[in-house]
Image 1 (tube, one colour):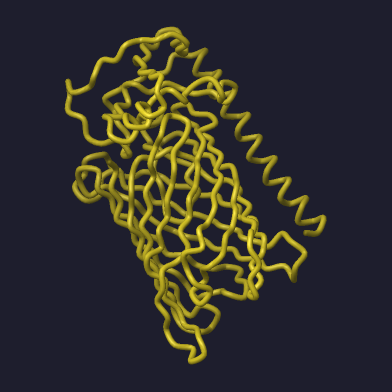
Image 2 (tube, helix red, strand yellow):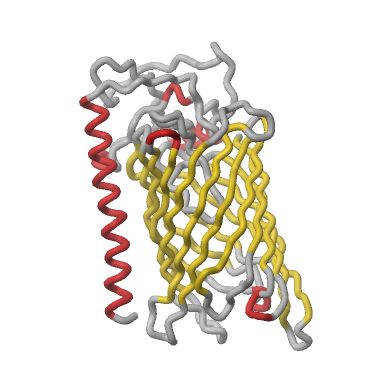
Length: 361
């Protein structure tokens, strides 16, 4: 890793840290000015709850004080981590039980509280995931992704299908599991198409800070070498990073972050240590409940991936992904995106397509 690359990564990290500090300012602002809170206005990541179905939960000690003039929801706190996990996975997760969490109280609050869906932002934007964008949000959902890339490395097309699930264990922690059950590309002695199972990835995601309009999470991931080198698998890699999500006026949302991925095994093809910087911007253009296109968002995501070690020449890849997301009905969603490489490394491709079917549970 040369000095300029280290400096660049430090700048990215400083930017994320600055965002975290800004989010704290938002939290303090919420404590000073009344913010309308509508528990019935559920975000897209919140399963449908009929009026009157919410459960009134007991108030317990060590809760966050409500801002002046704002009626804060009640909160469920449990002593058993197993009970918290079971309620987080299978419970109602009613957003009426949500309240802010501060980074200053990371070790003392949220760990004994079940997961709840975060209400919409003050401008009405829901917390959602987008294709080729960092999350910065806690989820309870699964999706199936189907992808295609044209003329990868000037040696044919690639195809892939992944199944991903997010399982919350409490308000501070959820687990993401990625299972790439189909990976197809050209390779082997005959340079023919090969289809194999890919490397699974297990990710722990920690909620550092959350208000109605801002959230910041830290991630720690490891790949499991269940695939084969012929289709890009068979390696253990470790990743860590910071991600953020922030809602602005008029239902605009910005999100992004920085990740670093380090290989834990050596392979002849020379897997590198890579840094990944992401930034995405989108706007919600339809109203919730619109058939097939409820709360539709249009966005563009930018991804920069660059090698940050000294084991070879620098490889840098930069792409833009315009995409959309919308609700079909009853917490089923469809997502699509077109990735356009702008700067390509040795595995560059003409363009890529992705389509997701997603279910919030």
